[in-house]
Structure formats: structure tokens, C-alpha cells
Image 1 (cartoon, helix red, strand yellow):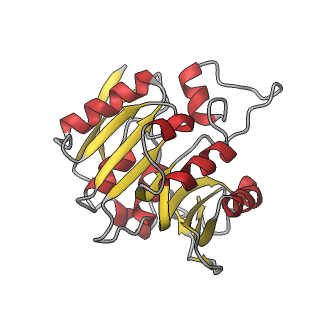
Image 2: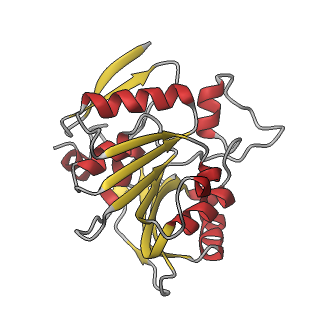
Image 3: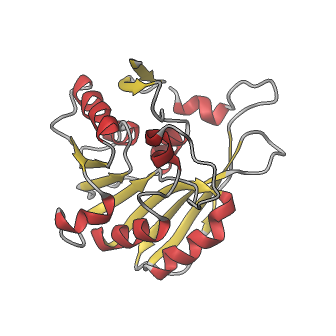
Length: 238
């Protein structure tokens, strides 16, 4: 069922559908990790879903923001989400295949690229969600890591930043592929459910043609022991 929800603490509304893959806390953590500079004029969010990241970023910058979503059903939700927030002049949603973006944009075009991508590799023996829309959001059936980082490197300006949230189990692979496509890891922040719980997710910033030097920032801890949100998370909702 299609509903309109609020992005907590952001004074933003978003269209969702219970049958599809709804946005999660990562879609709030990632834009909070993004450093937007005054000189940044064009931002691209890949695998944009129903557009939570473009909407949140639009509150941080006046830059032009593009969101790309392959699945038509989710794209339609994103368009409605942009419209209900009166953001049509700043945010443009495109129903397109990320792998083919060279057909739409020239190289060295964006100041920032963000992505909350499919996390899981797709193998024949992998148990895929029976809901095809959810499966494509979670698994690399239409876009894999190498394809994602290749097109991102092509579209980013030199010294521009790439931001991603992903699973820690794939960290080494991600670092290798980032460097392969001249995206130098510069900042990383691990996300823990609780203190003393291992991190399952991380946020990373990489700079195209950047220099060596990776900074590991203090971790995000989502919950206190009483299951209330940690103070740092509560600050994101204000």
C-alpha cells in the first residue's frame, strides 16, 4: 500500500509502498556524512530509490541534484516525493540504468556522487527475495560493484568526492575496486547497532585522483542499551 511518511526530523515527506523496498536509516546516515562545499554545483545520487538522499541533501545545499533509479515503480515514488516537497526546481529524478549514464552525461561532470547500492552479490545458489523489486534493491542483479565504481569515476570531476554506505564484509573488495578506478579512500566511519557490537555497515568517502591518506572516524552507535537512539543519532533527527 502506498503511503506518505515523514523523514524524521527533516521536515520532509516521502512516498513509500509497503510492497517495495522502503528506505532505511542508512539513507539518513549517508547524507549526514557528506561534506557539501559552496563550490559544489552538481550532485548525483545513484540507486536513488524513492529519493530520501536527494531530499535530505537538498536541505544542505542549493546545488543541482540528480537521482537515478532503474525500477519504474520506485522512480514513480521518487518523483512524487520530490513534488510533495516542492523540490522540482532543484532535484531531477531520472528513470535510467546506471550502467548507461555515459549516454546522458559527459565525463568529469559531477562534484559529488552518493550511493546506497545493492549490498549482496547474486549467485545462483543465493536465496533471492521473491519480490522482484525488493530483490533488485538488495542484490547486484542489475548493477554490480565494479560497474558502479567505473561509471562513478567516469562521471566525477578530478578531486571530487564519492560517498557510499555498504556492508563491512565487503570492505576489502571495495577498497581494492575504489583504487582500481582512481577513487582514493579518504574517510571511513563504521556503523554499529550498539557499543561492543561488531560493525555491520560503514560509510566511506573517496576522492577521484586523490592522494594517499585514509582517516578512520569515530563510529556511529545507533542504539543505547535500553534500545533508545544514541545521542548522535537523535541529533540527526532534529
